[in-house]
Image (cartoon, rainbow, N blue to C red; front, side, top):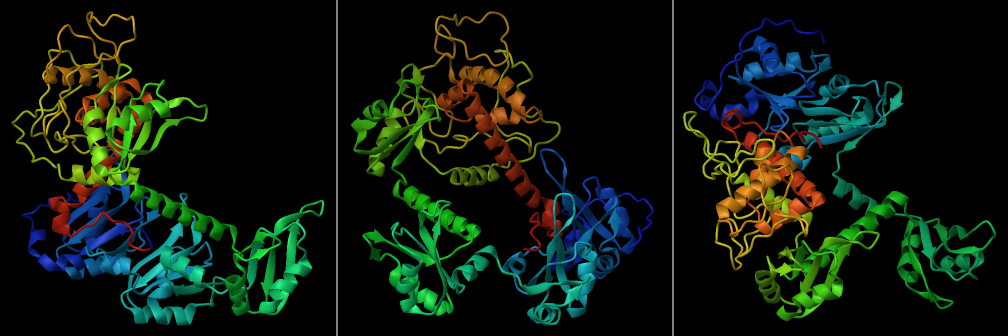
Length: 585
């Protein structure tokens, strides 16, 4: 399709009180999704292009909130469904910045898309076929909701694609007419789309003729296999696998003529003993199938282990390198019966400074957590919390910060934001927490951890331990002289600092380190990290690896929250938009 020539016009203003708000239910069909965008395409370009076909209410290219980089798709909203339909018909696959765009109706309700209804899968496609060619081939069978060729990062076709119709009848008709047909001299497969779980289920239930048997004795021969397995049906081949010297590898394969006979042999012989050896007999699998099965078993065992230790397993870090498994168990044994205790170590046996302690009851674990969190052990304050899986912690973080969206401030009101300029703030600089601008995550009981009611901590606020640990080398003077170099630890004071000054000191030490990792978001990430337990912050100052991991976790949370806030913004609500780009499975 030729490039459409457009006359530049200013994009319209859209908002909750704009004309788009009056349409109500019509937005489902007057809102268009525009995908496969070249990353430099702007809102103005899209407005100029689409406004030729009717009155455009709003245009928005979706972007990463942190980097402002285009996510490769946008939403265009018309004032009526007729203009939207015309734009879809005329502009679909129009090149923009040298790359054809892909247009479809935006459906806020993802149930149809996720259900897989009327969705078909096409493979063995000629790599010269693009989205437009696929659309033209299948459009004769009915109205297409979405159509996409899978491509690699360079934009080259992977040889398969997806087409979703608006009804099952059209999809079935396309399957019946095109499956096995030649398209560009290649015979294509066209069939119903199956999710990964459904495909695995089909594979598991598929009939098989080839049987794998292992744990054979070294004396077992091909003839032995034929004799034993031959009782269950006609065998076409049976072989014991051997090395180059002819020595048995103690496993082999038996192929049946009939799949039912193979299944009966597996059921009867698996676990049976021959020559004092218990045989394993099962379906012969491809490497990929075997790996998938092993992965499933591993994940299931991990889930069972997590369920077993739910609420009784404690994570302990900031351990001194001298702490052994026995010493860790000794420290926690007074609180109850310990079922397992382990200090984590690297391949060289050097302590990672963290470990796990599992009790028999949640009550024992809670008591240990309350007493040991913040306790000084070998001149280091312990950090103790309930152990969690990484994905569970991340999900809770995302949910926690999604609820922290602050109310926007008037431009005339100076935001009270903790700012940490390069080099760290001076001690005289005030740090305020309260209602901030929309980009500020407000204070919470802790970043990444549930608030623990332990001695020295006030509910709902930052912990106030009865100690302050200077992070200076032994024998090194802790006296502050003049300014401070970036990354220096908190200095020793003659008196215990008040909590605000403690936090201020931690902030000026932490900011330069965070700034080296995430320069653009250093102030925000530093503010988030300062909401953790002070013992945890002290640990971050001591451990570059722990700091790097926590900063990365904070950035991921910010990105996820930013995308959710984009999806829930007034513009999105106005236009019935969705940031979910999984328009085809």
